[in-house]
Length: 260
Image 1 (spheres, one colour):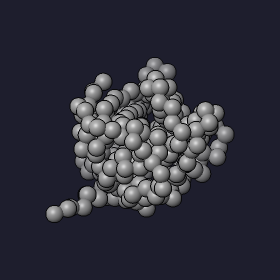
Image 2 (cartoon, one colour):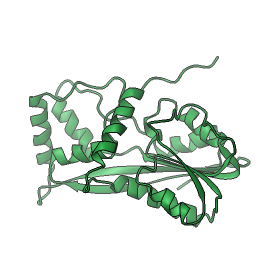
Image 3 (cartoon, helix red, strand yellow):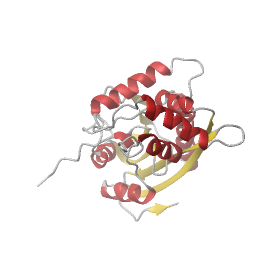
């Protein structure tokens, strides 16, 4: 008997996070290093694999970098905004895509396996899927700061995260052939707690948990700032780490996964 996936994330909060991101990204100095890194990663892998698609589907390419690069190669691209589609439902496609890229959206879905199955079914025979999103090990400094801020009443504030091995199992389970799963990190130095939170919000990385903690009270916010300051280096900055997990797989007969 089929069972529904647990409700970890709230779809309405997820959309609100992305709407806020879209608004904040209108600022000329808005941080875009996560999106830029994911776009570069996808294009590098596509070039390395020597895959030359004719039709591509892009989900979450909000800077347009991947679409622009593929357009220059005469690839017909379709862009889907995660705000306007249900990624946990079958994709409305009339013809399979040679290439699908998902950028920074899969990590906040309740039914990640289901979403991957739908991506697999949207591929043409021999097609390639590459998905990038925040993985296990992200935001260790913020996690520690929030624990100190909440004191003896810790609240759920950091999303659960997928690690490399779980990613490989997911790809196999969802029918992708020759799966490759790896990760890399981005280290960013912040001069203030407010700047760290601002960067997260501007890049769509805010909290969208279904059962989230209460907003920080003034005393808790003061403790968070003190915890941030206590971790600062000689320049008064704290280094935060963003782990980017990348999953790739093909629409062809299955083989064992490769873990890098």
